[in-house]
Image (tube, rainbow, N blue to C red; front, side):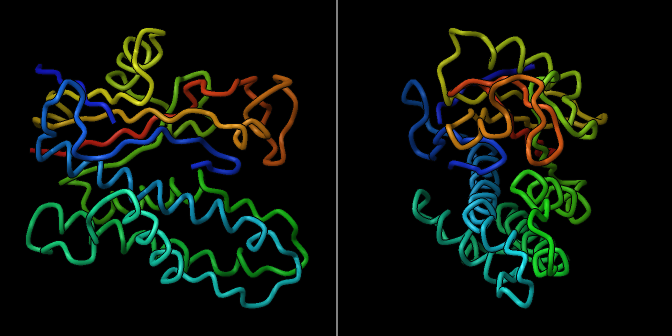
Length: 253
């Protein structure tokens, strides 16, 4: 197995994200094509979650009625956010390339998931809808896998003791490197972990992108530990800048 290291929003009711941008590889090394593809996918996912985070008041408005937060609206806002830190419009990437194919699948997943949640978003008389960034991200990643799971997979996981959804528990490889690298106090904040390894019997490029708690996250994930938050889960007792989540991306070769 070969390893490389690469340095790289506030999410209400979810995770903060350390900035990871292309073209600034740690140690002066350029990112490989796999790294560029994976980090682009991670950044578009985070942009979409940021849109859902920014619209929580609208989503949770109990007055009901069509709020206009359609899949197309969310996707366009996500792309606009993505472009602020990436000199790239995912809509213009050649769909015959690997990056273009994966972008098309991810953009379609974002739009489809939000459109399928219109009943929840527009529901009258309910003040907390539960359509938070973490739920949005999970649904988008599941839909993405349905579309291109033989090519690539995206998962949001975390240190095992922080995982709320059992389906998001880290696999053996993820747990090994979350605990061995990302949780190491000496690990530089925001630096990702990458490796070429075997996954499901195939050679694959894998990347772990760390995400950290911001002040906005601590309303659900902070102290006092054990107190029930608005989503119905006990708080983890996290502190500002603690590792709160990890975007794990696999690109099959």
